Image (cartoon, rainbow, N blue to C red; front, side):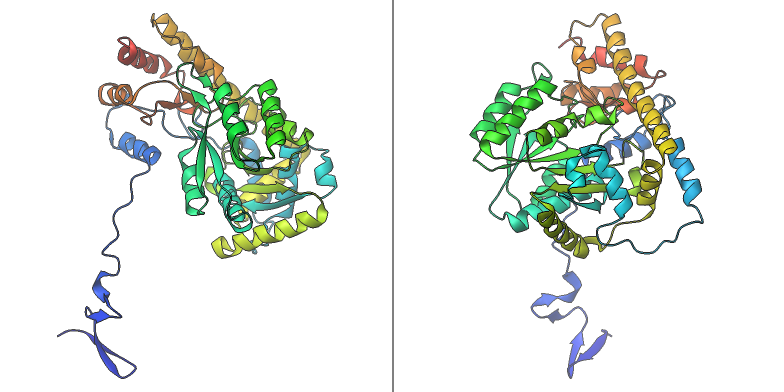
Amino acid sequence: MALRTIISGRVIRFGAVLGGRSMSSWWGNVEPAAKDPILGVTEAFLADPRPNKVNVGVGAYRDDNGKPVVLECVREAERRIAGNLNMEYLPMGGSAKMVEETLKLAYGENSDLIKDKRIAAIQALSGTGACRIFADFQKRFCPDSQIYIPVPTWANHHNIWRDAHVPQRTFHYYHPESKGLDFASMMDDIKNAPNGSFFMLHACAHNPTGVDPSEEQWREISYQFKVKGHFPFFDMAYQGFASGDPEKDAKSIRIFLEDGHLIGCAQSYAKNMGLYGQRVGCLSVVCEDEMQAVAVKSQLQQLARPMYSNPPIHGALIVSTILGDPDLKKLWLKEVKVMADRIIGMRTALRENLEKLGSSLSWEHITNQIGMFCYSGLTPEQVDRLTDEFHIYMTRNGRISMAGVTTGNVGYLANAIHEVTKSA
């Protein structure tokens, strides 16, 4: 017998039509979402039983044994936190101490912008959350604007601005033939964009290419932004992780600030502190004066409120403990340099191994690029061969996560790359 209930005196049979829709098929039109290409690589790697398999697809740091790393400064911070602090809600804007220390990293220890309280900033759910809050802020207060995004970029950038309903345009960035920066085309696109356009820029260690403008090129980009009145939004996911020096990695932002730009900035502690799962970051927007900064911050908080109400506390406590203690901060700076230096060392080793094998191709782009990723130039078909024949896993655009390269597998990786490219 069919289940029945009474609503306002009427008998309703479950499975019958209610309000014009069958109650048993509310979600019948939902199709499975497309698999994330990066997570799909990891799933395939885990399912492979071969002992010599290699995963260079994951965007997370590994030590020279291929194992995840928890920094000693993080361990010490957690020892200090444990049992000593409560777990009450943070304000909508997050931890004031964490935000304060984070702004110093991006804008400088003695920044006049910080002293003059001209920066509106809130704690965010890592870099992704910071980008999303800014995208919604852009849509709410500049509803007719669009965002220019480099080709290529981290795939999630497109998802973020799409779901915020901000129209997207692209600008040239990577030059496939040279495997470097297509600076001339990039500058043309900046010049040809409508005055007052929003541009999304990678502050350092561009993902996925590892190709960054030189300091002089950044100065030219900043100048042209000034001429056109563009708004630069920086995604800085790798500060310290690129060169090993957080100050050097913030140079692009500092150049724009020196030139008097108002900027936006997303920061993350996933890579440079290894706090991947803690989802701790910061969104900041430089304003004309303190009064404007107060207004902008209030609106950023209002956007966060219906999304997640307030950010998580544990990661913020770790960051503020490390950066607020001179000894722990010194230890962090040492450890982040160790991570960056290992990545740089693996770049050198991979290039040298390929050259020793007698490859007729140029591999200098491996060491010219910087950061976690190497945009290898491998074709999708060559990547498929690496997976099928050598059990080496990476995304089909040829992006190699240098964090997955170790002294134990670099020779094997180089040999496999040589095999699939020697007929190119």
